[in-house]
Length: 613
Image 1 (cartoon, rainbow, N blue to C red):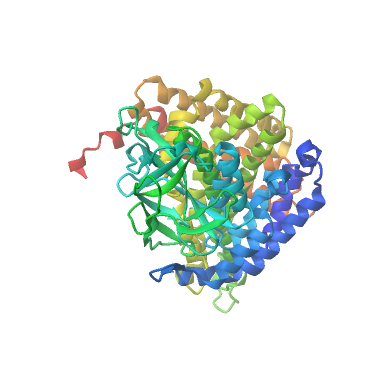
Image 2: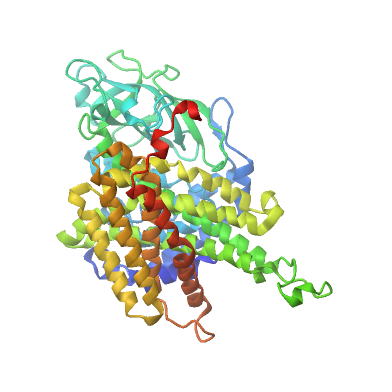
């Protein structure tokens, strides 16, 4: 795969991943072990995932009345991934993990996302288990998390409901104590759940022995009624099949029923489901005589959303990585096509000679523009995702101040890490189709599938609008804006380093000017004290903020590239510098128009009357 040289550069030349082995947590590792993990994952992705990406797109999951049927290739890929140890790669040795740096794990998982995001559905299982390691009891960790890490169980997150969507305040699923002594169950306080959940990825399949659903539901308040808003939400473990305290299946099915499969534009190799909890299809016996699916409380009552955000934030970065790799997959396909497709003649005098041989389309300036755009989007986004992964490692290995700074920086960057690739790597996929011309619109080439698969990522784990309001309405303000200040300091450091390179001085100045405009627009947006007007332009703010962050990332990367543009420089280095310059000249100037409406609190959208549509 063309990905490996890029990963090596970002990991070792830019992020200095080898130095992670100097931390006590990673002392048993070295570049040799990191490379071995990358080699293994590259091989599995090449052999078990990539050859079947089109197969799982055309052979969609189907329900035979008893179980969901997936292609044999999906089972083989899932088994190979679990056997590789990657489900628990970053976990402690005590948890059966490799205690691998998260930065290396994230890089290794990029191979699977590049090969087939539609098969690569293990990330929710990891997030599910990681949440339980933080918020679960010792027995919940042993029974549910560890069996997820070893591949016996898989996991989901069940938030959305048909009537509520992303509005979690309106969750209608209910949980009531399962009779007297409900608090004494060894697996956790036992409740009975009733309700419906929708858009549940991997909600039903036969890939693993069991599926562990993490479900948001409301329990009664002191007056016996559900508490309004998100304060009333609690979190529950609801296994598909009942287990004992040793993690063994009891042979009894929990009352969780498949209500239907969603038929999607893309990601067709992963089941997406509607689930009914407690409808009585699989009644579970109990001393209380109550109906409903059995669920075990995670954490404290009414703190379910706080617990679930642990998984949601992890999932948002995973979505960004998936979007990034789809963008790069399209770019690699378009690059290969452009290098081999003859069409047309050069512009100018030579092009007027109809007898002259055709040239490959990569020789046309506009095709180069489209390829450069894809390269700048995809490689820049991958660098951003790995930078965020590096912050996770800093939280695990740094001193108290470094840990706190990494936490805050990650808070500010998470909406960007999720949303920027999902918008702009989707545009990269669109350009990949354009490079192919009419062929790109057919199923004879893979780029149309990459676009279809990527279109979901702007919606996955919180839409663009939700991420934008989170950024402008919460993240840049939290803790008196300290996260924004920390990011400002990092950007200033990069600009100062770049300014010392004569070849990068103009980009350093452009970055400082763009970031100053972001900060000015942030202050202006909140100066009026009218949140409704401010947040009406949250998406343009997200776009401008994201583009500026990517400009910073690109310049930071460029500082590690040997500054040799001529024939003496390596082609890969020249390509990185060209992509960086392209981003500064073609993309960064867009931020001015976006920030203008933000700073003015433009009310065009807010004031639009419904009947005027």
